[in-house]
Image (cartoon, rainbow, N blue to C red):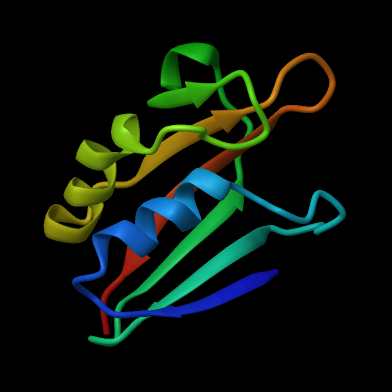
Length: 104
């Protein structure tokens, strides 16, 4: 599991983390990314099996080369606690993650 400590207002850093997806494909999960925010909230990304219609944002690459498509999803996660699903990669190297936030 990748663990990060980030300022609660550092949107750029959060976008970079979400955009990088799971940088270690050997992680078995279920939680593969954990972001400890400075205000005590915790963002977690878990492997997620879902239908294509459930995916909120995707990239054909292993990472999001541009983080702009992630902005509305990360902002809603922070402000409203609304989870979202990312999908990166293609063919047999796909990583689908559900991003959630826990409040203290």
